[in-house]
Image: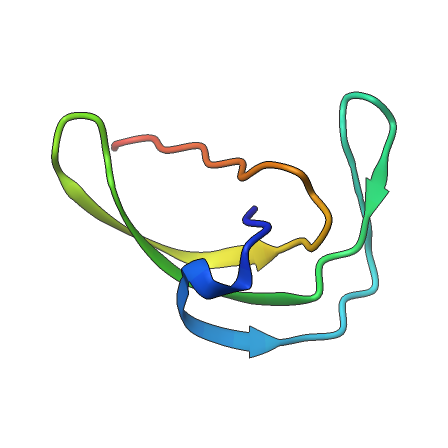
Length: 67
């Protein structure tokens, strides 16, 4: 989940019929979905697709795993 719209290299506004509940019980509704490009601490470049845009989130939440 990303808060900042400008971080998306590909983006589509989208109406979503669900909300996300954070650990402090705050509820957020995603307003779009897209692709982001970022650099990991190892220096490797990573592309994440299907990332939710959640305005007013206050932080970006990324979970990366490798198969």
